[in-house]
Image (tube, rainbow, N blue to C red; front, side):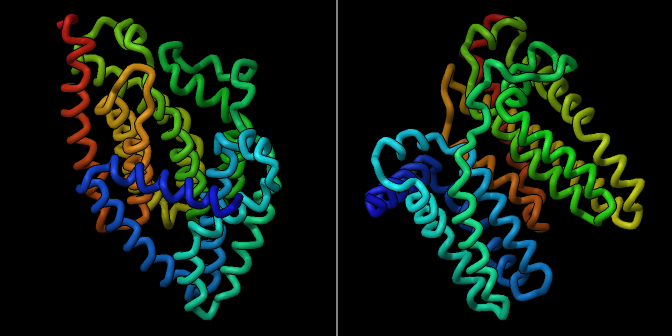
Length: 315
């Protein structure tokens, strides 16, 4: 049964890669190659090897919490823990190999042990979305943040408190803010019905600009306490935080624009989700930092073209 699940996962990955198109696949492979080099170099250093292990564990934790097949796996009668660990370990083989070729090879064993612990978690955020809570300060037309916060409130609170509590350590709060931005990216995976799209009665360009202004402003208020606190507690590295913070606005703009660049009512695009993840990870690769801006400009033009079918009557 475990072999069948792995085969299904491989086929799913193959389908998503084929849906990306050649240029997106090239970008993804380039990022993975650079990421592999970075992982190898950092795992050769101490305590960086522990940081790499922690990041890998957090990524898998996010995947595990939000996977949608937990109930289905229970129905198969197979021990869910075995399936989870087998899947996470199989797709982590490249990371394990890189770790084993360094003097800190034990990080591979540590990461595998963490997978066993993560597989015991049965909690799924957002399962009680209807009874969740979202702050009243969020505008009513910002349904993405309303639904996203309702569905992920415990995780968001933990990360936000952690970001504030880690202000005394260089870069730690900025990393947590990066995790929060990755969670916010998931708010834009689903496309709203066309009647909601048309409520503002704006043409494509006006709709996009209003959307960007509203959501970027919301992120500014959301993240400002963390950034201000970081500048106060870590003035020596404040410039790094400000650069990353500026890039995070570009990334958020891309998350929004990429949604409407492939907009289809009540539809979610796997290819768009993969590209969003790639762009988000570009923040860790200095020479790839221009890529989010270029992709953002491309998505801006493409989103206007895509929305003409639905909003062209409001010119």
